[in-house]
Image (cartoon, rainbow, N blue to C red; front, top):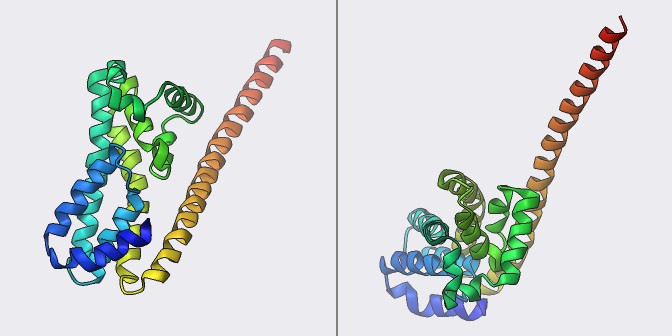
Amino acid sequence: MAEKIFLWVQSTLCDQGWYNYLYAFGILILCGFGLPVPEDITLVAGGLVSGLGATNPHLMLAVCFAGVILGDSIIYMAGKIFGYKIQKFRPIRKILSPKRFAQVQRQFAKYGIWVLFAARFMPGLRAPIFMVSGMSRRIPFIHFLMMDGFAALISVPVWVYLGYFFANQIPELLEKVKTGQSVMHIIIGVIVLIVLFFWGKHWLTGYIARKQQAKEAANQKKS
């Protein structure tokens, strides 16, 4: 699928000039709603047209970032405005089935707000997670924006510039996309480990302090 999209972009879209910004922006918003086109492939395609000289790569990066964030924000706001009633709409039930809804709820209960960060790298669960975060009305929009924006600052530049630098090497680009997906998973793993390390350090410091206070209180009672 990726190869067909890249070849089509190479043969068709390079003559569209600045319209490519609109195409990338619109498709990325639709990706947030479950359009069956991988978001990472769309971002790479945006970089691809820049690498072939049709657009400016830095402006394309800004447009793609805006499209990603706006698309995600619309999903969040839809959940927040309509609440659990949104599940009555048949198209929404395809994105947020009862089984998937329960799965997302468990993830939020286990990992908290960091689920929003991880969602950026989980295409199948991204839209349901963002929608549920709005439906719960427990996560302020600014917190949602910070976590999603933080993740997008990692993923969007990687994909756009990957397409830009390998625009004239489609076979190599396909291999780099596969490698990039693996690298993204490694990045997530490293970040999760860092978060767990600092959380564990904070918990351990608090635990030691509480034990010390309890010991001092016991000594005072004895005296």
